[in-house]
Image (cartoon, rainbow, N blue to C red; front, side, top):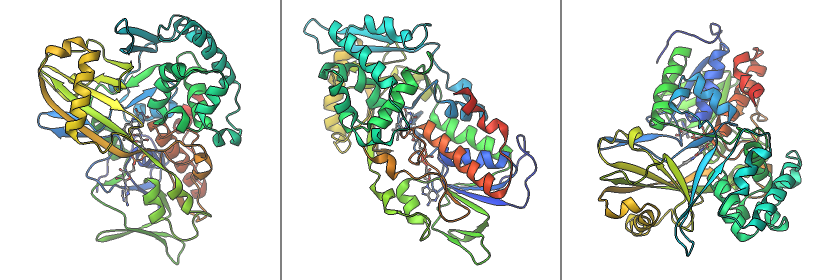
Length: 470
Ligand SMILES: Cc1cc2nc3c(=O)[nH]c(=O)nc-3n(C[C@H](O)[C@H](O)[C@H](O)COP(=O)(O)OP(=O)(O)OC[C@H]3O[C@@H](n4cnc5c(N)ncnc54)[C@H](O)[C@@H]3O)c2cc1C
């Protein structure tokens, strides 16, 4: 048990909330409730906090299970970084600038950039689009028109979720090349699905918020330290000083209502009593733990599909990439990040290749992936041709995100259940966002808000500041 000094909230009254799951959703819920003066216990089955965004040791190196990025428009995740005092360790670019390397042209490799300038939306992307070499002139004009049509879509219209983004793009004159070189380039990384597999509602949400809201909305941020430094060490420090009792290696096996109207949370060797319980676990685990009658159609949780992300990790004996990251066209390689400094590598360079929507590759043996990706990296990065590969390994996250398929919107429940005092959180709940760190934090805030309402406690203002920043 850990009790620290309370820095954000009033002293806790007798009310006790148990948060199950120490991913970003659960950490957020716990911090928010503790800041509002509720006594909180956070229970996590694994030996660390951070859920799907974590680090592990491989010899001397600290490796992330998968490259994570966020955008300036992710106001809730940015609030979270501030709250755990980690914002400086995961800074944003000053201005969106994505190097896009095309290696499929007969005339050889060609580098393009997706950049923004200081003009108002949508002109902030106009110059970059006008000079983007990976699209024909005709395609550039059509992309501009489709972007304007996208901007006009009403995100509150539930019909958007019944259509797929690929068909919408085709109906708006987008060629296969425009989909590959622009829409999927951004969409696959943010939605974890190609356009034809993605809900128009979620895709419109991503493109409207990221590219068509505020000029700086799509500026990219990423951790310059291992993810575990943020989501485990700093999060744990913040939870401790907020007075949260945090228990790792503590898997919840059952949640039930007792006769006095309180909740009983079972973990091996202990039963905790609580006034409120928040299940901040993945949808399948939530389904297992939900008591009978807590949701009208609990089977919907099991109908939410999942989608994999594969990361290929390569350590070279020398520097082969001069930029912090780039993305590729005409190659199976999607996004490549330089993780040398973050991992603690002292000599050579460590690149993480992030492969979203990796259904076809997620179960491939390491040898087959090595045979595919090393030559591809040599094609993209000429200095890699003479370099020695010191280490090659992969990390596989089979259930990295929920699948953002058309129709998924009606399957995602909100924070409240029909059982009073029992709430849901998680990137998969109804936040309007795809499965991202932003969605996880937003869900945690919503769940905390619902608990505070039920316990009759005021919402701490600072908790909702990100809504104003949006
Ligand atoms: C490889 C990869 C790359 C990604 N890239 C990005 C990216 O670039 N940008 C981005 O924004 N997002 C990205 N994501 C998605 C992002 O990581 C997730 O959306 C987010 O971390 C989910 O947080 P969560 O708290 O909702 O769920 P989880 O992280 O799944 O947390 C749930 C927690 O509950 C625990 N738990 C489950 N059952 C129990 C139980 N019975 N008792 C106790 N504890 C339990 C689990 O151990 C887990 O820690 C990526 C994900 C992966 C895997």
